[in-house]
Length: 277
Image (cartoon, rainbow, N blue to C red; front, top):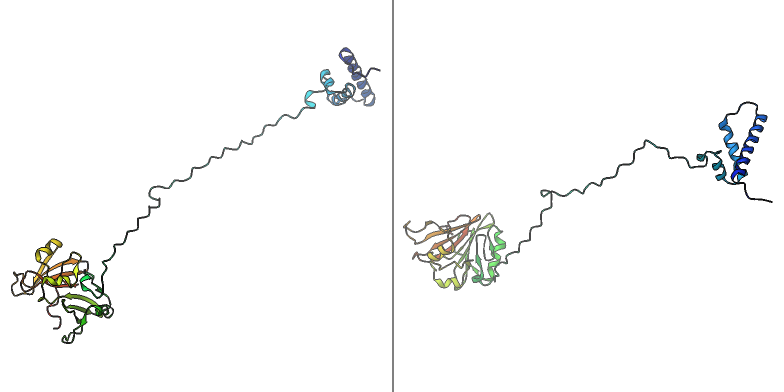
């Protein structure tokens, strides 16, 4: 028994016979005219059963090729998504950029001094050794007891205190409203240069016994502000001052007019003419 499917002319004759047979039977069952397109699935199915493969039906032209094909893609009106554009990161403008931190200034070390040695004390526009101008009076004069002894017995002025030290000049502290308002060093008479070794000096080394020429070299801004002497043109007891902030440092010359005999620090550039009057 031949089990091979027919090919060639045999296949063509078989397909034609089968097609004719199917059409005749369809006419018997359905006398009404049948549209040709309704017969295609039946014919195609018979052909597939007879041939054993869809390729035979395709070869006979009885089954449309798109019957078993995947549907064609249908175009849509949906637009393709636009590409996402990454916005650049905002760059800080020069004006909004954080300023660079400023370097921390290195503090200037203060001059080291010893409470019981006035020769190590510095005269400035804000303090004389441990005594600070503008500070409470009682708290400041307490620091003088290590180097001086009080000698206020003969002064009736309660706002001025005298402090003595053997072999050195006298220190006077003036108060106003309970705070230190001025400090005086010397009593004009002791202007021997030897006192520079036992009493406070400025940062340039000026103090009791300094000459006018040296003061002018140390302080170019030095200004003559008058005199307490009888002759206004004389250097005897003349006053020379340096302004520094709210206060002044004033140097008063001695009776010879050649050397400093008193140093005053206070808001008023002129020292009091009389501390106990």
